[in-house]
Image (tube, rainbow over all chains, first blue to last red; front, side, top):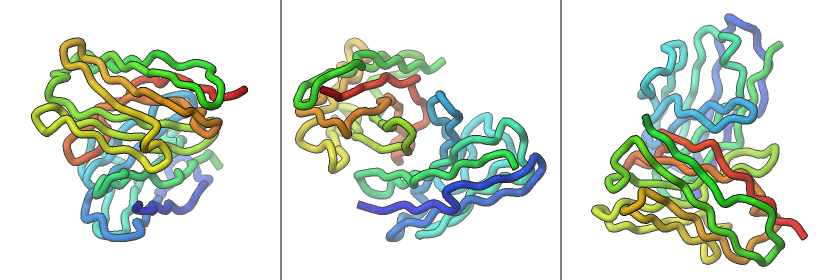
Length: 107
Length: 120
């Protein structure tokens, strides 16, 4: 299985901050990397697919980059509604695997 | 509007079986790939498995922890996806989400989830 490692596992930031979350794959996955946001008690929501493509309706302050084994999710200016847990997922090979999550908290 | 509604969760004893259902609407189910993703209480997301549409072979793939115990199926006549869970273990306790899958593999729509608790 392809192991996905996110860093950091948790992060405290303030409204207006620029935040970057990284995701590393244990072997190359091309651009088959996707990002989800999950708020407490809710289902996950797709933010970015294929490393850098925006899902419809996602604010432009979210962006994704990377290919191969190293990927990043950047939030350019944190808004109150962005405090949540973020997951990366690879779909290069089955079984598809998720990172362990990054909990973004208010400082 | 895409809607995915899971049902069938509940309390079951270790070694028991349970079948989850997912009612889909708002899109052409026949063309869709579907999947199940689970989340143990307070833990991260875990991909369970996926079923392709009939045109792409209708084949299934599973995560290693559930392979041989869980079976994903679909009924295109009723727009339903199912997850048959057998030989359940305490570590299978989780919220189970039904999702639509774009062919490259990511889940673009999610249901609200159904809770499965495996406990004696």
